[in-house]
Image 1 (cartoon, rainbow, N blue to C red):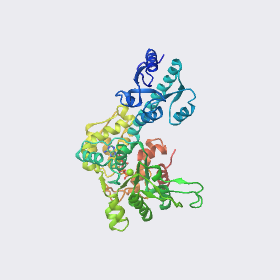
Image 2 (cartoon, rainbow, N blue to C red):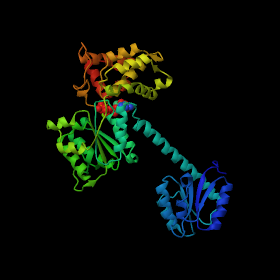
Image 3 (cartoon, protein in one colour):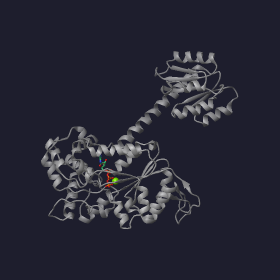
Image 4 (tube, rainbow, N blue to C red):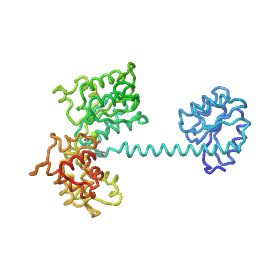
Length: 466
Ligand SMILES: Nc1ncnc2c1ncn2[C@@H]1O[C@H](COP(=O)(O)OP(=O)(O)OP(=O)(O)O)[C@@H](O)[C@H]1O
Ligand SMILES: [Mg+2]
């Protein structure tokens, strides 16, 4: 007996007597049966998406079983299909299995045996559906956390994303550090029709030009010493998806030329190869410096700039949408275990957060929230606690960013201070290390810098880890 009485089975066979008899037998066993006498009729059934498995006769007038199998899989890729074949029809049975049929049975088939396979098929379909559901949920929470904000600035940003997400031309995202450029890049991809294809990111500031070129375009074996096997470039890996090229202002001029070529022609040549490859990858680039100014200084190719600048999205600095701070704090608390335990900021604490100028934008806000939560034992965080953290705050860069730019980029307005930046940084790192019982990984998470950068700084300042 089928465990799940509401599983719907599609039964397609042109033999009316067999179809009805088998259909009734399956209904008695707890399945709900949708039947059709030919492929066309089956594909027109309104309830087709409800089906958990299908039984399809191989030989039918009009569309044959193999063709119906293809069509069903185009519409419902995870639908398990059991094929019914005539005696001695083993070649077509094998062909059906190759094309992804779940199983095949020879007619006349035993209903009890069919029931066993249908139960397995329904179970497989449920697992696959569950997997797709989990994958989508993970995608939403991990790969594509939501863009939060009710302000005009954020609403305009969301509108722009909605309008340009499905365009194929490159997109350029500009904005200060920590203001959400990567978040926007992910939104562009995961809200677009490309979402089932890869989203790959690469940072130009952390790779030497030869390595960057090798990553982007790949190489054939023997292309250079040590190239023992071939390597697929990211333009191949991200085909039909999106390639997020971060910190593009730091891209070497030679690599800029190759990038321009692939954007213009949709073709690239792996290192050492004589053949060109084509790609349908969408390029999404980001920069936190004014790219136009880089062009004026002769550091960035003008032609590439114009190619990238077709769709430009600017992420607003947090000080321009400070009214979103309460919502952003709520978002932080939702994401953090402490928030889920019920830790909150007092209304005055939120007021103190709203009054600050946030040179490190949302990343800095989330870092301050994290430190406030870690340092305070009270369930409600006070305005004093927030103010004392803000008085010693300065933004640190994202993980993966180069070490030399870590301590406050020159463009940021630094809060007035009497001590040197290095003193403040040393003290801040020491405080954080103490707070997390000198666990270096945890400290690097709280500080928002990568572990190696933190270790370098600890060495420089003579600070001890666990
Ligand atoms: N509007 C927003 N809603 C929710 N989270 C946001 C928003 N803006 C930024 N964030 C969060 O702030 C952090 C920093 O954002 P992101 O990494 O996208 O910044 P960035 O502009 O790429 O910075 P950088 O130039 O330093 O690489 C991330 O945790 C991101 O999820
Ligand atoms: Mg970034």
